[in-house]
Each structure stands twice: as C-alpha cells, then as structure tokens.
Length: 109
Length: 117
Image (cartoon, rainbow over all chains, first blue to last red; front, side, top):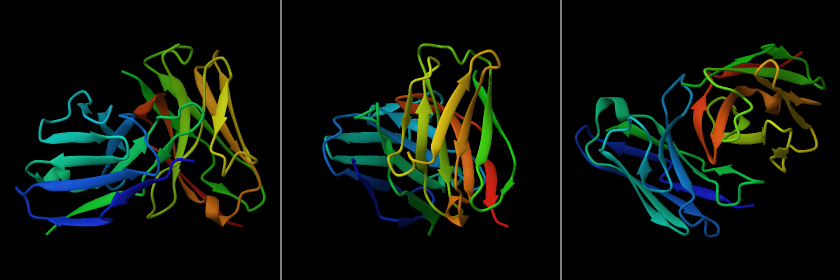
C-alpha cells in the first residue's frame, strides 16, 4: 500500500501571504497525484490533478508541483475563502488502490 | 454536470449492516469514462477511500475494509450502493459517493451515519 504523508498538519498563514503544503508518497507515484480542498460541512473539491493541472474553475493562485515522491501545493496569495483543509490523493496504482493523505489545515494567523 | 446524492439511514446499530445508495443525475452511470466510489470521513478526521465500482460490476475495495464491504450498481436506476457489515462505533462517519476518473471529479454532499444502539 502506498502511504501518503502530508505536512504540516496545520499551517497558520496571514491573508495575502503564500502557503506551501507538502505531500510525500512512500514510493513513487509518478505524477499521478491530485489535491482537494475541503471547507467545513462541505464535500471535498478537486483542485489539481496530474500533480500540476488545475481543475476546471480553479483560480490561478493555486499551483501544484512535484513528481515521484515529493509534491507541493502552493497558494500564492491566500484569500479568505482559501482557509480550509487540503488533501492529496495518489492514483498511481489504480486500479486497484487509491489513498489519501491525512490533510493539512490552513488556518488564519 | 454530474450530480450525486447519497441516501440511507442515518443511524445503524452495532453489528448490523450499513446500507447507502447514491443516485446519479446529469449523466449515465454506464459511462465508460468513470468508476463510481465511496469515501468516508469520521468526525474531525481525514478521508478514507472505501471502494469503487465500474458500470460492468467490476469492484475494487480498500484492503482494510474488504472483508466487510460490498458495492453494487443498478444501471437501470442510475444508482450504486454500499453495504458495510458488522459495523462498530468506529464506522461512524460522513459517507460520500463520488465519480472517479482516476481522481474524484464530482462528489455528493455526504451523509452522516452514526453507529449507536
């Protein structure tokens, strides 16, 4: 099983600042990685797939990078609506398996 | 645009079977482009993939849940379903259904299932 580890667990950032979130895979997943945003009481929303491709309607301030085992989600200038929990998900060995990271909460500093 | 909606009991007794259905609208569950999946989230915790199904009936399950999970599809109703047997309090979670195209494009709103006597 591929284990996905996200860090930090919580990130405190001021509005307008840059946020950098990390996701590490226990073995290479190539570029088969997605990022999701989840706000309280809502379902997750797909932000990024293929490690760096923004999903439809996702603002340009969200960018993804990395390949292999190390990935980064960057939010260039945090807006109030960006404070949420972010999850990574690998799909390199789909089928049969999919795994999520444990999440990073981005909170207001 | 695809829309998904979960339905089912919000309260299940320990040792019983949790049953949920996801109704898909705005597209056909028989699309060759997608798998259909279930994901859960215990209160205050992260996301856990439960399993996924193709319209043909091929299924894939999380190994940690495989012995207790059955996912089925009803193409005539444009629905797919989840059964989780022998539930305990640890199965209390918000259960989401979602459309899977390697990653999860579309999600239902989620339904809270509480396991309690």
